[in-house]
Length: 590
Image (cartoon, rainbow, N blue to C red; front, side):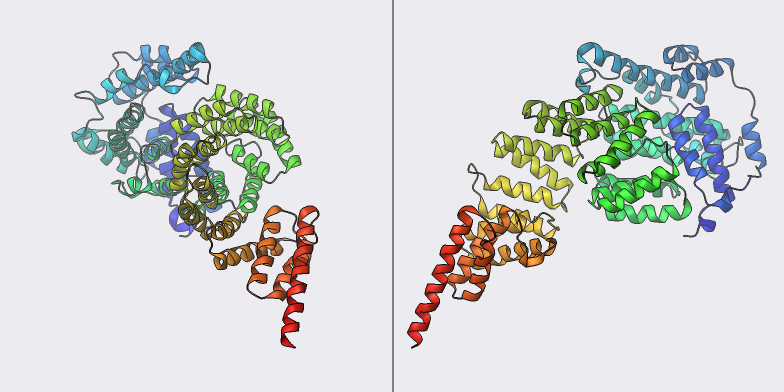
């Protein structure tokens, strides 16, 4: 796809018109997202736009009702109850959307207030739901409502295809006499109806409402994001009857990222980057995909590029801080935390970055404090729950860790890190059956992650289970998925030795020793200072002695002399034994 062929003047005009519609309906986050896409077009597409008659008509449409203007002003200053009251009894799709949107936002605001009153921002979401959901559902989904099938919905799709949701024509009429503005309002009512259904737990109905919305008005990114939340797995998303539109490419790329199909996600974002070469959103998503693949160097490079192009961007910096934490980059993480605090101190992402900084320094209590602060700002902030669980594990507070991880999986059952954390915590508590359940959930979400399989293998080894065959299968899966730490190779050697299969044990111990030698700067002649190397050398020296390959046994035993204590003494005894066997063999020859 070339930039020239993917972005036509009509599509650019479509984006201009859609930003205008979204702002008119007070969907500022979606308007910001789309405006960033507009600004990310190739340079040749960013020449001054010669607006069509339809776009001019849209921008200079007739004045709105005073009640609508007043309600929008109230929404701008977050006086949602007043906005809803101002629109009571006002007819029209736009007034209906703004009235329901104001009620929804008022309910969300009240939900947070009740959470603080009942038990602080860390109280469970189920304890205080949005009190306006039932009323909004009744208004948007009741008999005669604009969002219920029939000609109104069809008119919405046809008009949007001819106007802002399609080629960018402005206030003209669609089929059935509906103007583009009315059709967009209907589509946005469908979006809000889907959001309400999703919160009520009616995912199937929510998907249908969201599909109707994005088919009628495809440029509302919030609707695509909510549609993704309503899909339980990738197959759900692929089976949706979606209209052919370039926004669907963003949706499917995001779905692949959400469900850990990271390579496919990267391919899709690379294709989108040809059409939006300056898109910080796409760069950030690609960096996240690399992070999910544990390709930390590539992810860090993209995040640094992102910060260079948009130095005051906060989105995604929590993920960047995770990378710096894993790489133990103290100076860079300190700089990132300082810069984020100066940019926007009271953003959840900023608190998360600072929490990671304190965690890396070993100040776990301070880290928990900042993760809690992030949750005060956004109690649905998934990363803060998961990272706080990690901190509680470090502090040996297993009950608090379990609560934090459970809250994370309540928010997103697709968060493999929380399931993995629960497994680790129950393993610490010597409850392997519980740990095994949570590790299985983690492996279902990340079947290509060696760490998940290695953890489940260790669980099977526990004295309460002693299922060595299952443990071996898990370690084989870990080894086949690129076990970087060599845990699987070491464990396979140990388990096969324990099961009496010494040939296989020797093979895996040797593989692991070769891996460690390759990673060591000095190669085989440089001692690898860890217990895995000692165990491998100990087994291999004894194994080759038993099978009569004395030269190899001697070589491994000589390497054991580099280690002190009992290991060195054992190696000396083995070398004396090898020397004795050689002498005996020579005597028999003569």
